[in-house]
Length: 143
Ligand SMILES: [Zn+2]
Image 1 (cartoon, rainbow, N blue to C red):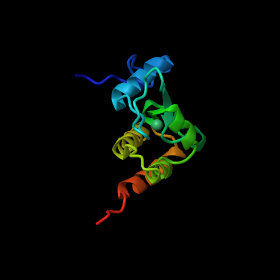
Image 2: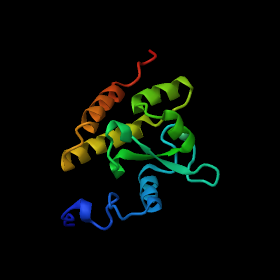
Image 3: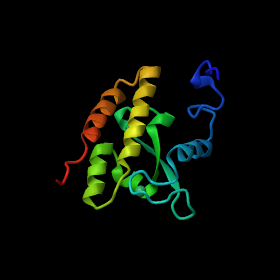
Image 4: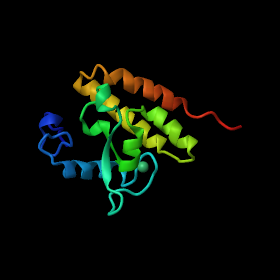
């Protein structure tokens, strides 16, 4: 299949500016599943609406790209605040929860690729690198 000339201008691109918020959320849920990446609760339900979480917070220079967004429950989204994904994962694990490290790692890699392709993002770039380094180091083994 021939590649579209520019993903930015492709009508079905998740980064299309004309895509509505709900259409974009639909694509995020299709990609990641309808669970909160942090606490793994089912989201997108009557009681627990899905919210958009930025891997690299906007305030830290994170882009409003599909690749920088994950779905989370409103509670985790709010509680995380501007903490880094690695800090927030540590905190959730201290509370006995099992955040989806693998999904966060996948998303960080995909964001890193998107930045390499599109360029720019001078603040987000080192943030992603340091998060990957921390998360790939993994947790100390108990044995
Ligand atoms: Zn949650």
